[in-house]
Length: 312
Image 1: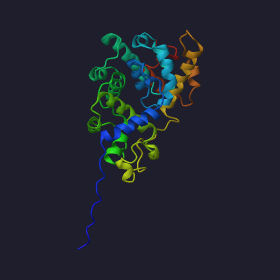
Image 2: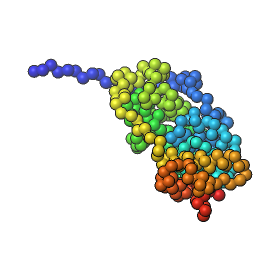
Image 3: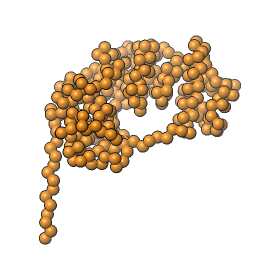
Image 4: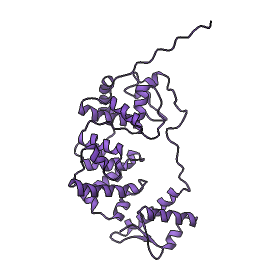
């Protein structure tokens, strides 16, 4: 009979109690100094940062967040702004419908919550443009609620450290949320630090393609590292979206042209004539398709003479 090979012993699963002190020490030394992490930032400031950071690197968000909070430091201030002001201030953050949803959210906060961002998870989740991730992030980071925050970075770290497996992205599942909740520290203050620290670790050290395991505070306890990085590089965590020549590029060109006029003509409602529009993109059919889509999304208005402007 062939010799039976003994299976390799399972690597021990680390515990939250083992990891938390290491994470705290690393966070205090290495966390980025982002403005919305200041102790005096309001829940509104946290909410704005989370909406702006959706599908956008945090480092790009900083200047926009600073200007936004200077202009609209409260939900009431944003609720009273014009759509044109809001879309102009969004700049090149991308996915500009988020700007209008954030203003819609501000108006609901004013109308239903007296101008104060609610602290309860269910009330946050009911706000326009706020999903499960944003609701949990605001509850945890702004109000210190013990709730698991689950984003791509957190899922990656938890999967690697506790399961010894690569995480390939995709939509967050109920299983992902149960896993995150199961390892969340019992102490409320510790849970906030855990959420912030694990997210920051995934964003700066335990990255998808170039993990810096040599400086990771979990390096000797991480099951993925000890197992030899299974799945590393076999499949991307997110497909790269092409940009050049797409409708997204054309939409951005139209909005940027309007923003430029808005910044030049302070106090005057900017517009682009039909001739100015035609010069923005050579494919007239694609350009018209994108203009109509922007109008349908409420980001511009098509005027009777064929010119376009920001919504009033």
